[in-house]
Length: 272
Image 1: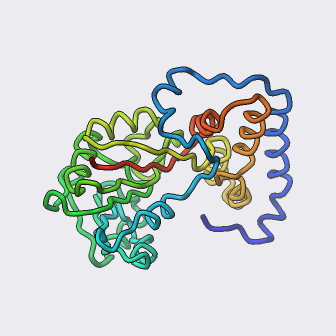
Image 2: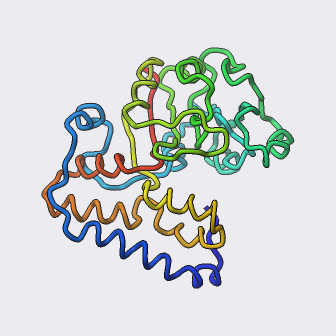
């Protein structure tokens, strides 16, 4: 995300201080965290049990690269913003997008990008087993049919291929949003396509993210001041970690709590 300039940050400092005070006050008298058993059963094996580290989706794309498996599909690639660094890892990049899900203000720029295939939002125009990695950065919220889209992603993946990305959870609207996913609902969609979801990590926390979105809508000059609160080491997640550790929760359970309050989460799945 773009960083606010110093004048904007200074002007909004009281707001950031208020947010910090509010969050700290919410956790000041925190009792024993309550973990729903269904959450543990549905997602407990998909969050790390040994580390609180939360990689970005781009980092996972980098880490799984193999020269023998270099073909990557950027699903919902938009303006090809990720192409340069993906190709920098050594991948052969291919972009695909559905123009009906592209924000009106950027549609012309997206359509002008070279090497992007545009499709009908349902059937991907590629043969079976064409790609080693399918990467999706905040595009799954715009799919027209969850089952069809996930099945198509599985179809174009080669056996052993990875499906990696970031998707919206507690975010109500971005561009032409059709669906947002709970982590459990996402797992159901992945499993239904014959893929195996094996890792979910927290991204932006919902409180900071939705407050920032509110500011964008009504006080855009102050929105950038909250950018520093959004990442996985931001204030809300920091407080969740502190409260969970104090209560004696395991690393797995702390990670489950962080995912529970995520506006976005990062995922990694595999085609058997």
